[in-house]
Image 1 (cartoon, rainbow, N blue to C red):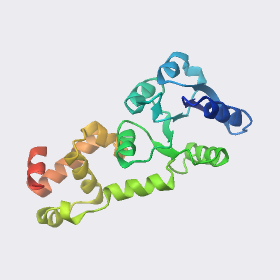
Image 2: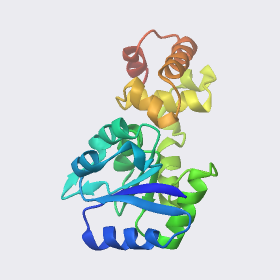
Image 3: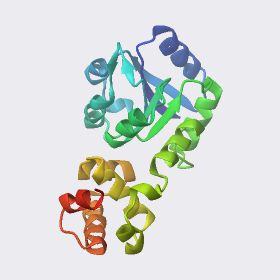
Length: 210
């Protein structure tokens, strides 16, 4: 049995999800609240929460910046955004702030249960197909944005992603969260990028894009 929590301000949906999982033999909703603050207040270690479904907008305010607060209480839990919002910027911000999945509310309860079980069994990330397409599109190579020097530098796919994230102003920690690697891993790749592009800083990278 996998224990999950729900943070959702829509009472009808929150109750519907809670009631559905109360009948499940595989997933148990042990905490259902409408704010991150209440999650922190009522959270207990003995609940052993493995996954948290989080609405990206709670009472008209983004919950993205509160993800680190949730992770302070459950550092090993999967944080899965469950929302109707699917613009690329929101998706990217959520993942950079620690979310490990992004599902749209078009997912029915049965599908949701199946995907949660698969994810917690180590069989894949919780990402809706429409969201996955946006992530791929966001990082798809765009020749006009890449200089001739960069094309000749032989950057790997991961290094290319890091270049884009650096140019977008992402911190090393945000890059680490997004790629699922350590800070030292980010530093290693950045060092290789700088070496291949013959630069010494992020400033040099930005100048190459002008």
